[in-house]
Amino acid sequence: MQRVCFQLQVKPDRIEEYERRHAAVWPEMLQALHETGWHNYSLFLRPDGLLIGYLETPSLEEARAGMARREVNDRWQAEMADLFEDLEGVTPDVGFLQLEEIFHLEDQLGAAQQTQNTTEAK
Image: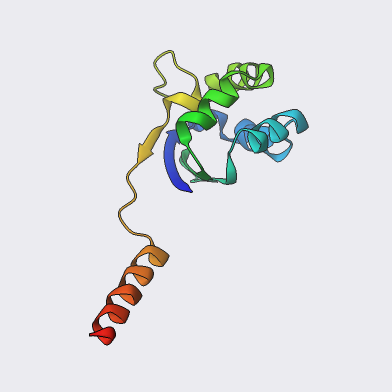
């Protein structure tokens, strides 16, 4: 599973609207996200509008392509686009800044355990 973290900037004067829309996401949008590989998907919002998203997916490229084929995604992205800063003509689902993962506890624990097992076997 690929772990994806991203950021966007919600316009400060639109934060309440953003929160309101996400309190009741359309059921067909929720189903589309699930069916196209957006798993364990969460959004975190700072009071100044900094939005951090996290999801797990077999492939971000395939998850985006799957949503691009869904009519509900076209409608959702069109309604959400005005809530964000600096998208420069792209929709939020492709205009976000993907952050680089530099640490994952389970990966490092697994590597440390493997190293320990190799050392003990010698």
